[in-house]
Image 1 (tube, helix red, strand yellow):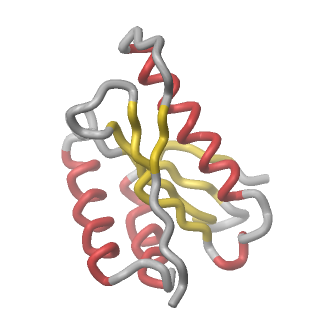
Image 2 (image 1 turned 180 degrees about the horizontal axis):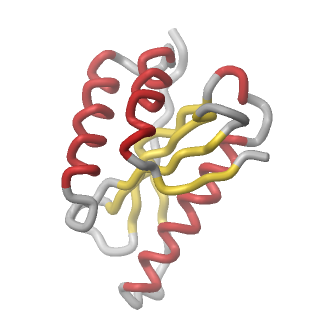
Length: 127
């Protein structure tokens, strides 16, 4: 059974390997993932990008990165969801998205925000 949890530093090599293997990720995307992970683990209390990891049977099945949209209130960006090839079509992406939505809702409740929740992302078609 796949479980989604906050990413830990030991997930970094697996997350980077998934990023490098994903054909939709550019080299710049992979570089940014690496930078954001470093910053996230250096000072997670002050950082506004969050990572979630989906555990597979014995490896990382996928990850998601999200965070509040700068200069807004109640808006979160979903930067990446990446699922390992062996776990695609198994609901891992759906679990990661639900976890991001739940986390964003939690943060909004902490802020006592009662307005509309907006979660934005971008799609890039395979070339």
